[in-house]
Length: 150
Image (cartoon, rainbow, N blue to C red):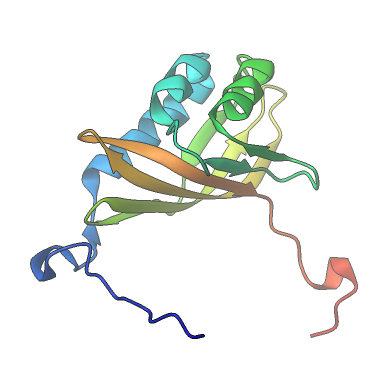
């Protein structure tokens, strides 16, 4: 027996155009500042959603954190990293209750090593505040280094 698929429109038509979001751009810049200054843990506690499905994927093969508590534990364990983040190509957009930020950054470690890193953040509007529901942080590698022929 086939179940009919019902389509519902979540947002009114005038809210469906994606648009630049200076508010999300500012939140991510604050996140980067907190990373360098040591205030990242407290900031993350307020910035991440507590809803089911929230997740973070990092650059290590097993670097996956699902659920608010696991994510907060990850930030607590990381401590004050002192990593300076320089935004290179930060772009932030929103559409209705959803927003996203993509960026290529330079992460400067306390020992002076600089690493090019890619960030993607997905936000959901909850009680008039933007909350991160997913973050993906990765270091790009070439197909060649993986043995993939192009």
